[in-house]
Amino acid sequence: MTQLKKSRLFIFFLVFCLIFSLAGCASANTPKQASESTETAVTESASDTSSTVALSTASEAASVTDDTSENDTSQHSEKNGDIMILYTSDVHCGVSQGFGYAGLYEVRKSLEAQGYTTILVDDGDSIQGEAMGTLTKGEANIKLMNAVGYDVCIPGNHEFDYGADHFLNLSDQAKFTYISCNLNKDGEPVLPAYKIIEAAGKKIGFVGITTPESLTTSNPIHFQDENGKTVYGFLQDDDGTGVYNAVQKAVDDARADGADYIYVLAHVGMEETVHPWTYADIISHTTGIDVFLDGHSHDTEQVVMKNAEGKDVIRSAVGTKMNCIGHSLITEDGIGETDIWSWPNDIDAPTLLGLENEMTPKIEEVRAELDEILSKEVANIDFEITINDPVEKDTSGNPIRMIRRAETNMGDLCADAARVAADADIGIINGGGVRAGLPKGKITYEDIIGVYPYNNAVCLIEVTGQQILDALEWGARGVPEENGSFLHVSGITYEINSTIDSPCTSNSDGMMTGISGKRRVSNVLYDGKPIDPNAKFRVAGSDFVLLQNGDGTTAFDGAKVIDEEATIDNQALISYITNTLEGKLDAYSDPYGQGRIVIKE
Image (cartoon, rainbow, N blue to C red):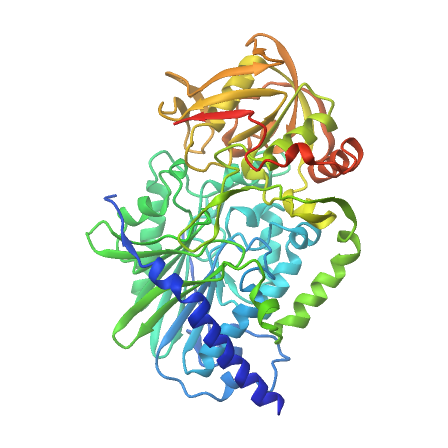
């Protein structure tokens, strides 16, 4: 059998698998009705950067690398006049998880072979989250995104985890366009607000939005100049008008430039603690948006809600780690189905299907460069140490993250590691900083970096009991919803009454400004006794939270710094597992932890 025939048969096989293994997601994620709820543009052409780019083949549309196989059937297909927009979000370096980049590439190639013109976009948080991002500061990820053929992307909050200046250098390496209508430096736009792509005789405008929460969910120092002054911003304010106005202007400008449809690429999410910048906030305060492709909260919600004029807007999210691929169809009659394909299986699609294509050697090349230093075994366990609820699943069958709203064995382990590493009285770790669990079986250096991809320092400070109480209150403000500032602890225990409204206040930058009213957090015990608000304690944790106001935590301002960098977080975890515990982790076998945090509902 010729290689071309094998390739065509595999495409048909992949489509067959998608239909029978994945299509159930479409019915499970039918859009539901929601409750009430400075820029520049980019237009491109292969020959003239002042005109609009016309897409016709997979290689032209996606800037696929020069060594595209001669067996690529998309180069020989006749176009059917329809456009398929494919979208991903919150990949977090998971290029070989879920569908994987190889699966994404194959899906796109198959659609092109069927006659669709395709556009590939991403909603942010792609270049951070695992060893690949940490050890290359995102460069390996940009290389792979170029190869898979993205057309337009936005920065999420974690694109800035290696520094805002570094992200802009990475954007220069990208063969695709980064857009954001609200990212600015010293009040001036940093990226184009929108991009128009012409495909199949239609002009599709893409508008980018980056969450202002970036200022606190990435390290705040990443937005500062050499003098410690914050120079980057996201048009943040108290009531959201700065972002709403920027989005509206970008939409209006794209329409004026001839856009037939407006797709927003957003990294804002649905968490209430992000208000006034949730997707619902933005949609309800703007007009002219047709589809709102969203990321940040890692959900897979498909929603239809009203905009400021009472017109329907589709909001679609695609989870994380390539467990879903979004698809939005545009025909001569307008926008058709907008939904997601899901891959909830433990084994990634390329492995399960034996998939090999142009992406395979590129991914293998990048991984080979990292394997030698990542393959070192740290421990071996017969249970999972998790960040997810071991039972609860979302509508797509994917695990629901628990570490940002409740105690887990992973949170306990990380807090213990920090406390021991710095020889502290108390260890405090924010749930948003713990990005993955540890698998059953062999635990490697790569697994540890997956838990702690930021390389944050573990620092040691001296604080009062009152500062600890205030920090716990701030971290508990979102319960039972997710919030990255939720605190896991070592050396203390506490209770949260989620029926009490949070008494915390904050400013337009998302920084805690005070606590007024009845507190949710109570029964905070140190050494089995109520913590003394006036006593001094040695507290260890990430410098992101303890020293740099990460997640808006200001409770530790003014604390005495004993050790600014006792160690690096992933090294602390490795040392704790290998040296302190000698690889024996049985004390952390319960996924719900050791009973350090009790939540009353």
